Length: 400
Ligand code: ADP
Ligand code: MG
Image (tube, rainbow, N blue to C red; front, side):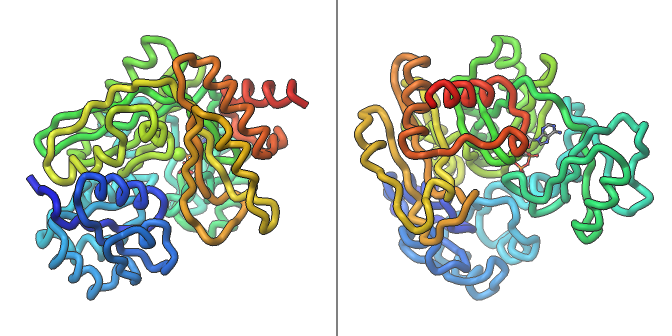
């Protein structure tokens, strides 16, 4: 076991790393953050911020010498980074688990090879791989294999010709074409797996995305007992098959009553932020615990929770939103990430409303959205996220 006051290493300095630093500090650990941005949210709180590229050998050597163990907050860790760290410092999750989650083709092949229910797909490496119009994959979504997140690097396509056009705009990078499901709703399971294979999962979460970015999460998810059990079981099996150690997010689609694994995040997940305010142990403390070889914490949820992401759009120009309207709600917990640059679509913070009554919690969270000026998206821009999104829209409609 790695015990306090040992030093832990974190690759990446975004909000997920920031919450890791906070959890580690509360538990008595020190943290070194590696991130090239001198104003990174986690770097600002860390005991030491190595302001360098992720493959900077000097910085990585310093991590090896000062850290008892190293983890990551994002999937796009370069292979060369792992090459420097491997066998020199304890690193979780492993390079191989991260490699699968960071590459959509490897990820989908992993799901296929282990018989996980997944969306039908085709790998597109060359023009000739583009499936014909009658392949059953249309309407579809074309996704670049690497470096896509929050809906970036994705285009909706209806025909082979549209795939070709999109493939060109992606500079012929390897892609996958997925058939586009009509979603009843989306859910996710966040869990942690320790060094000896114990797993502790949080309750299943219901998610609505807008423009490919997570918008609202409700925990526990309002899904059937069967779907819930299946999702929990599948998420555990994903973690086992990956030989995963750490906190893992598994995203699911439910379409026409059928559950599909969408993708995995080899790190805490945005939809798991409710655990900070509504669970005995949060997903970041679990990440620390798994990394350090401590027993996993109790994942019990003690309050109903609804989380709402605060994107840069809420900042009109340079003016700061009126935070008083959020602080005035006693059951609302505001989390701002300390990002210095505001951009539309950028995750700047989130809030979680907690309480005993699920309906009341959802209503308060929706009211707070209106109060802080979250704008209802035009329906054409919205991803088909099913019932929850429809409910959010209906709620906002009725309030105008
Ligand atoms: P990211 O890495 O950006 O999270 P995802 O593959 O999870 O990429 O896609 C983001 C969102 O886009 C999903 O949560 C879902 O709302 C929508 N989406 C993605 N793929 C599909 C699909 N095959 N069918 C329907 N909706 C999809
Ligand atoms: Mg996703």
